[in-house]
Amino acid sequence: MTIEAPRPSVVDVSHVKVFGIIGAGQMGLGIAQVAAQTGHDVILLDASLDLAEKGRAKLAKSLDRLVEKGKLGGTERDAVLARVRAAKDASELVTADVVVEAATENMDVKIKLFQAADAAMKPGAILASNTSSISITKLAGATKRPDFVAGMHFMNPVPVMKLCEIVRGVQSSDNTIQVLTALARAMGKTTILSKDIPGFLVNRMLIPFLNEACFALQEGVGTPEDLDLAGKLGLNHPMGPLELADLIGLDTCLFIAEVLHREFGDDKYRPASILRNLVAAGWVGRKSGRGFYVYDEKGNKTKSAL
Ligand code: NAD
Image 1 (cartoon, rainbow, N blue to C red):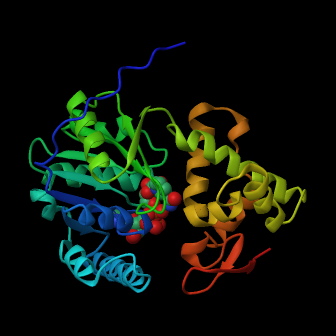
Image 2 (spheres, rainbow, N blue to C red):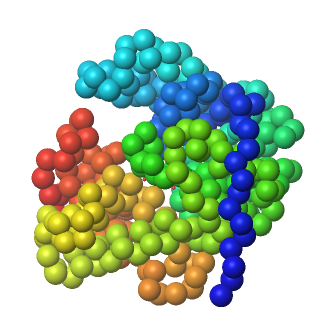
């Protein structure tokens, strides 16, 4: 049995004023919202300026929904949005104190983004990844600042979920871990610390569970609705496994399952064929309007898709 390193002490992070966020998808926008709500300026990047602007417009819509529900004041909504700026490419990350990469869960994509961000960022700035499963140490190895690289894994939806998993790469410095831990806490999150092992702590447990629900479904053990009720009422989970997989994105779930399978070399992690097939069909869950369930334009579940 190995003994864990002591938990990181909390340091002052008042110097972290500018956040760079790469990837304006569901996670990147959630991180942008929380970063801006906690007073940070946000530089938002996607694969093009057009996509970054579309992401910012989406964020504006979700802030509007919060105002309608009375969860956010109109003035605060305007202040939050004013802090988020869509940017054209990595060169604009030069002023960032911390960058969180939240692009598509794909190693080649992330390596290229890490190289570009590293080349643009100022010395001493921290480059973190929100990856669910990709090796932080490999991403760090693509940069000239491996000691300033670590994982900062938020949960979905970011504004609601209380946890942020900090991942220590082999070369992450103590200061990098301390700053990201303090920053996550300043953003209202509780932190846990994981070693850089595939799936870290959260997805090491979650993905095999979701994948097992897929196997049970394809074996005809029960309907999607009954599997989800089993999770909700039998296990007291707030969401059933199939609706949660749809929320995460079936492409992301499959990618993480493949990482666990490949990296551990253990067939217990092999992805279920129904998961592979739905991803191959482009039915990747809520973000595409269809996965295990069908969703309307507002993202509300309407019926089972199977
Ligand atoms: P998503 O598909 O909603 O968004 C990904 C975004 O990355 C898209 O906007 C896409 O255009 C952008 N992108 C792709 N290539 C790019 C490039 N070259 N440069 C800049 N942007 C690019 O995915 P997501 O669910 O937001 O996941 C993003 C990351 O967060 C992944 O690493 C994922 O594993 C991780 N994550 C996801 C969840 C979840 O529940 N979905 C939870 C925790 C962590």
